Image (spheres, rainbow, N blue to C red):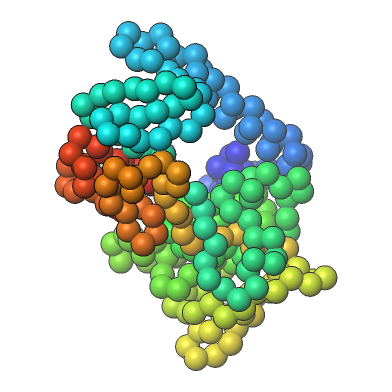
Length: 257
C-alpha cells in the first residue's frame, strides 16, 4: 500500500504527468493486513503442512527440549536431530523514561487505530529502515534516530545511498549520537539525544523502537540439556548451525548470528 502511494506521487518525474494517492481509511488498511496475514498463516501452515507426507503438524502449546527430543503437551517426541526456530521479539533500549511513554514496536505500530501525524524511530537496522520508509510514504512525518548510521551492518556505500534516498523522501535522519532521556506530555513524546556534544530534542506523536530483539528461549529447558546461550539469551551456534549439544541445531532470530 505504501508503495502504491509513493508510486502515484512519483509520476510527476515524467513530463506531462502528475499523480496523487493518500490514506483515506487507516483502520480498514490495518484490518485488511490482519486478514491477509491470518489467511496466509492458515493456508501456508495450518492447512498445508498436514497434507505433506512425513510431516506431522502439532499445535499443542510450547515445547520443551529433553535429551534426544522434545515434549509438547502430553506427548514426547524423539528424533536424532532437532532444529530450534522459535524466533525473537522486540526489546526496548536502555533510555531513561522509555518504560513510561508507551513505546511502540514493529507489531504495535501496525495496530494503531489512528494514523499518527509524526513518529520517532529508534534504530536504523533493516526493520527500522523498512518501517520508517513505509510509514513516511503513508504521509507521516518521520525522524529516524540511531547511535551509528543507517544500516550499520551493510556496506558503507549502501548506507550512504539509502540515507540520500530517505532524505530525498523527506525522512529526517539523526545519527552518530547517544540517547539521553525520553518523556511524554501533552505535546507528545520528546526524545533528548546528545549529538556532537550538544543536546538535541525531537518531539512526535509516538516513539517506535526497532533497536533490538531478544531470542525466544525462555522455559525451553536449554540449560538442563546443556545448550549454551549468550548474555542476551541467544543460542550459540557454529558454522553448521549446530548448538553446543550434538544433534541440536538452531536457525533464525533465536541464534547469536
